[in-house]
Amino acid sequence: MQAVISNLLNRFERGVLTRRELVEGLTVLAAAGGAAAQAQPSSLKAAKIDHVSIQVTDLPRAVAFYQKVFGLKVVGEDKPNEIVRLGVGRALVSLHHKSPTGIVDHFAIGVEGFNREAVTQQLKEFGLTPSDNLDAGYHIVDPEGMNVQIVPA
Image (tube, rainbow, N blue to C red):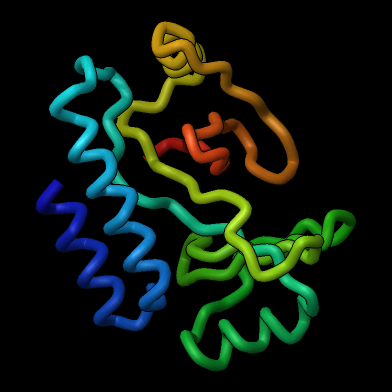
C-alpha cells in the first residue's frame, strides 16, 4: 500500500492528479486498508487507480480545461457516445457528456494478472455480480453504489 500512496503523491506533485483525485484515491486506499484486516485473502491484487470518469456539461470546454491546466492530450475518443479520454500516453481522465454532470461516474482499479474469467469467479465467491456496460466497462458496484471498473494493471 505504501508504494501506491507514494505513486499517488508523486502523480499529484507532477500535476497529473488534481487534489480531489488525490483525496479520492487516498480515501479508497484507507477504506480498503481498514477492510483488509477483516477481509479474507483475495486473488484480486489492486495495483493502481487506472483512471477516473467524470460526467460533464460541455465536453469541448472540459477537454480544453484538462489540456490547458494539466497538459493532457486526447488519447482516445468515442464520438457516438460523446466520450473523450485524456492523458499522457494512456487515459487518466475520461470525460463523458452526460447528465447528471459534475460527478465521478466510476473509477477504475488496475488488477495485477487480470484474467476476466478468474476475476469473475473470485467476485462471485465474494457474493458480487460483475456487469459490463458503456459507462463503467467491466465493473462491480461497491456498498455505497459507486461503480468500480476492473481493468488490467
